[in-house]
Amino acid sequence: MSKTSISMRYTQQFGEALRAERKRQGLTQAQLALRAGLSRQKLIQLEQGKPGVALAAYAAGLHALDLALTIKPAEVRLDEYPQLKRLTWNRPGAVTLAERDALALYERHWDAIDADGMTTHERTLLQRLIDKYGQGILHV
Image (cartoon, rainbow, N blue to C red; front, side, top):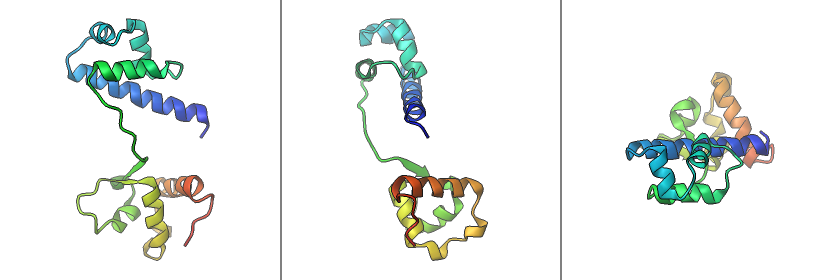
């Protein structure tokens, strides 16, 4: 995945989250723009996740909505990956798992994985994790 498409994905997620919170608080775009010290057009671009919007505009939007930015590791939703979910039997109630931890579980418990029964979706995840965190190598 290219750096441009990655940044677009994140700015779109950021914009969607800000829009959802604005609506949850019952604010119009004009009201939030005024609170944030932004033009309505800039706020629209921010909510659309336009990658050219300055980080300062996102920060102003967060502040105006009384939100704090939290950075956390990329996560995997366990319900989407049956083989991985089986490996988390000792984590009752777990819904997500950090990507690095997911790869570590696959590697540590590879003998318990039914590789032939793995869905295409899960194979794609595993390959992405191997490429991203394992330098292209599954250490089993």
